[in-house]
Image (cartoon, rainbow over the protein chains, first blue to last red):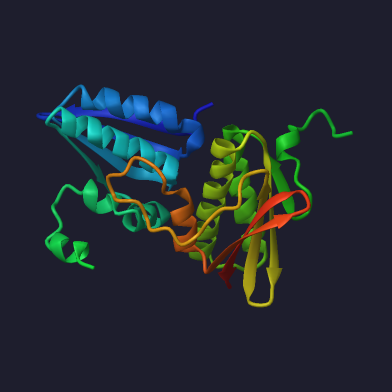
Length: 113
Length: 134
């Protein structure tokens, strides 16, 4: 059975997908389906990671795949509220910045060297 | 013979656990977390070890046809974790893929969060050994 839960809600101009649990290889395909479905529903998808206790490269794979789908459609996908080791994974992979709701002020610096 | 009441994949020896499929990854993480805590690794360090082992086990399940085995033990000042499978000799030192790359991050994450990583050919397969200082 699925190790993570997803709850959807909408607000004007955005679709919010609140995830909970563990996002690993077992749930990767289902997570991808949920995210791609969300991208089809609004110009801005906000993925709330407040209740996510674990994510690894499999979950990152699903997020980045959905990010590309959103960009191709002229849309955006953001992640918010990552904490603990989930935030660590997003930071060390650069995905925290890629999917941040606010553009990084020093993106040019980060690209240097 | 194993007691049929138990799933073979979640029967643990005192310090090792065998995994076979993606549905076992959660049990692998729980096993590593419990072992590391019992051996005295701090909570935030344990989370990194669990992450690294989950990536290695995922690598087994995605890139080999078989299963793998994880073992966690302590040496002075360090927690050591061995992941043995039938996969190739893993190479280290590759950079983290670009943020918008779809895949290829697993081993880079392992290298990033562990103090030491090494691969060796052993009698029963390929062993990735990772270490986190206590």
